Image (cartoon, rainbow over all chains, first blue to last red; front, top):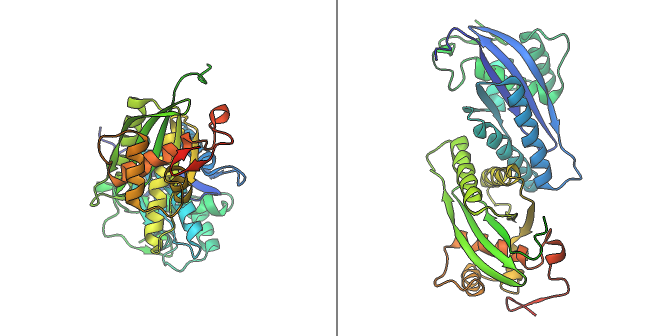
Length: 180
Length: 180
């Protein structure tokens, strides 16, 4: 299979127990195209296994629908509340479980790496990420915060992240969110 | 399907990123019988998605081999190191993902509940849990620590834990690790 000429479809994930954002983009050469995005919300009144099942079922459906070839998952922050850190970790573990079960190669990016790739610096505010994602993918409006973070993670992967091999934009640099 | 008269097979899990313990027991009436136990070890040099895949593949194989009907997972402690808490959470989320993907009902027990059910008090040392598990299941030797914790979690579930419905030992109490 020589997929170098064809578009590569990337699924970006911003994991969370309440809401897991997802974003699907196509990369053909240096061009990026929006495919889909949204978020999987879990019932806060449900048990942890039930909420994990909701995340899994959602991701299984998204993977079956859009058939991505690669996945990129945001590396989550350690929270000040250890119990929240544990819950977030469990949601992220479940999301990665869904991806590896579908045999997708999974790359991981910190929020800093994602912001640098999309906005051009690591201190960008959430609104800047949302606006830049909308601009880079030529969206008619600004996506929701979780969906924007997931799309941003997919864009970071497309812009020469791990596992893109010969497709990586070697030697290119970001300035103001554009490859220069 | 009326399985009330037949034995119920329970899979207990003690989740961890380095080593995930598992233990399978059968409960028929008040009698418990040992089926299998062990642990799934991951390569510390591997990436997190690779290690999560190892845990998943291991659990998928265990479920296919022993065909449990119910699962019980130990509720993990928050670690002093937040990064360790996050890693442990991810391992636990992946383990629960494997269980709910196999449509197993998943009950959760704290280490305190497990120790109370198996040893009779919540302050039991690891060695006491191992010895009591060996005694309750009539094992010829003492199981390894992770396998013992997983078996203990399955025993706690068998002894009237969540989701055992009419099989729960209602009104019974534990004393010295025995139902009285």
